[in-house]
Image (cartoon, rainbow, N blue to C red; front, side, top):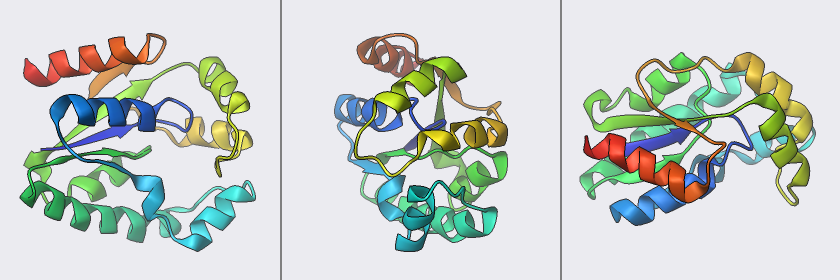
Length: 161
C-alpha cells in the first residue's frame, strides 16, 4: 500500500508521514524532493505552480509509486490539493493508494508557517493553497490540532480498522 499524507503547506505532512512510515515499517518519501529545479525556483519566489507545472511531477510520482509498491509499499508526503492531482497520483494503481488528509484551520497553519525557517514554500502562498484545496471525500481525515503522536495513533487506528 502507498499511503499519501496530504494537505496544505505547514499542516505537518512530512513530520506525520515520517512518523507513520516508522510505525508501519515502510520507507518515507517527500514529494517536494521530486520537484524540478524550475518549480522550486518559482515557489521560492512566491509564485504558485500551475497545473501544467504539477502534472509531470505528479505523474512521475505515480510511476515511482509502482516501484515502491513492488518493494512492499511506502509513505509519501505530498500536498495533492486537487482531486485531479490525487487522481493522477493514484492512476497507476488506484487500489493500492490510501490518502491521509491532514486538516487544520488557516490560522493554525499560518502560525506554523511563519515560524518555519529554511523552507522554499513562502508563507504568502498559503492563501493560494487554501483556495486550491479540494477536500478529499475518500481519505482518512486527521485533525492537526492534536499532537503528532495522537495524530499518527488515530491514522493507524483507521488503517487497521
